[in-house]
Length: 470
Image 1: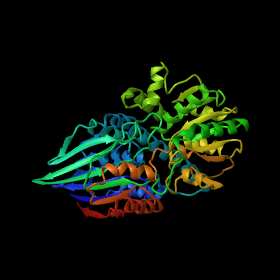
Image 2: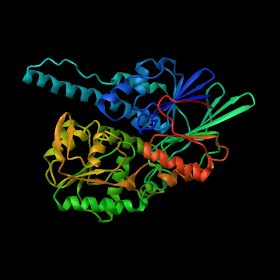
Image 3: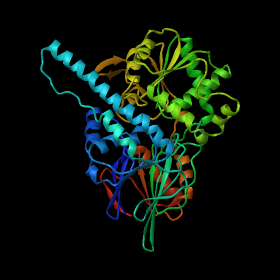
Image 4: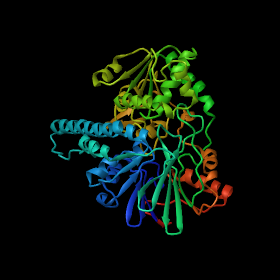
């Protein structure tokens, strides 16, 4: 087997790893790179290999930085199977269509603005932005999904067997266990995907995997120790109450998959327990509405906390002050509401979608709060807000930030350093090498040092394009 790192190498987004086995090319994930717009556009449009020569894709989970470039792969000639959990396949049905729709609409919006400026400034700049892929490309991708049940090994190529385990990151997320048999020789490889945290709301805890020869492991928070998850409700209540006391709005950029549902459940609990006022909560994302329907479909994947709602005859993702917003007209109407309320909207890193409009209309008001509840990649609008920049560009225009910006670290869906060290313990016996991906330099270096100290294993931090014979 030959392993080549094509994405999420010394960066967090764009997960993509290429495995060559007996003349077959298998991809582990095919995610969108998110960062500087021009750089992201270049990376996402150009593959380092002919997509038509890819035999199969194994998908760890549905987040866009892991699945979001599948339609580009198909657009450029890929026709093979995409192996994923049933829940991941169901989520991607909504997410890939939504991604294509947003890209088409954002390109249309920016091009209209550019044309208006050409008229006003009497210029002739005719370089229209093209969407990365279309809804047609997304819809052509969906029939290629091949659902794989956990703990049910399947042969995905000659002499190459796939097994999957609960990763505990989002609904349907898997860690991947691959075994290649060549005569009497056997080589095993684990790809962690994104490893979640024990005791996250809704999602079951990450599972232990068997020992393996090689491990590709995420390192998003490889230098960090999270605060206890039990503190999240108190911290969220504090932020909501302070914003309400100022008469402001709480604007929450959140991934439509996982984070939005967790927030809804927590706000439901806080209102039931009278720890926050009975205020209106809007989930402004057609994708989140569809995703929540998928969550309802897969109750078998819930943890005990979410199941407790069901046992009590309650709907975890619905309560009397919660409203899901689909229509554009309803979304725009939220700007005319001047009493305190909560708006949860996608995308999670503030790079596309309706959240951009809410931020443009609300970050200038010091009564308001922007609540960051997930990881923000370098150079994204979300990271700029988190870093305290006082002026940011939204749709190409400068906007002054006067709203409070808060971070809820406790809601992270990624394991921290200690949790990653514990998660890999069952895999470590017999490991020949660990490859760290999906992390910034400081995170990977810290985790590398810790693994070497804890397990005495060789650790590689591959660069994009680095290749290894396993």
